[in-house]
Length: 115
Image (tube, rainbow, N blue to C red; front, side, top):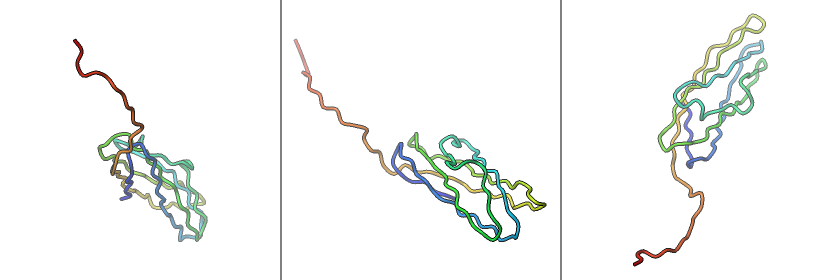
């Protein structure tokens, strides 16, 4: 589970580290699914390539729109490259709004009662 915590309407970015222990290149297609999948995004695109015996990080971005917790699932589905398939990976994405920042303060004066 990857947890995103922050202020309402704030953008939070988390990194997921992926390792390739094989001697062949792995390629994954990333998909966000679930009730709140629209609030999550992958800024660097949906295709992830991992060189042999290397690791890479992907950024997952979340922007809160509501006070309620948001939930989605990040699916990484392997594409066959050079006869090798990687395992399908799933990550649960959850959010929590910790506080609310005011957008602005407006002061006004008016009479409480008029004859």
